[in-house]
Image (cartoon, rainbow, N blue to C red; front, side, top):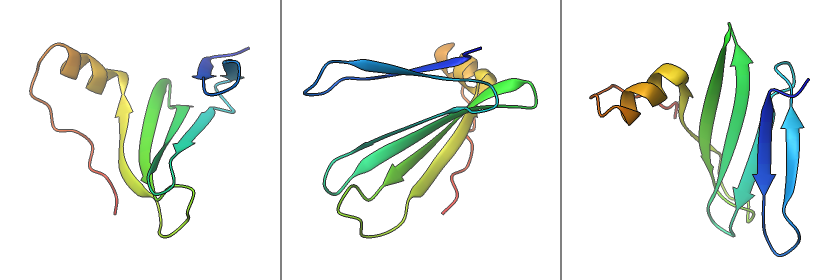
Length: 90
């Protein structure tokens, strides 16, 4: 059963894709020199979102991990609380 859903819209008709708790969902959007990858997963009973900046479709370099976020991070940020965001690896 699907737990995640992703959407993409561009020059063609919009599409959606589903992911389960075990498969997760991976989405990448890239320009020529800059892009982003988002991985949504379910681990130890909670959903997690990992965000990476990428060097784009031209290739040069490696991805930069910005952080992994949970529902608790989102709730705290939305409520205006000052929080320490997860540290990105680099």
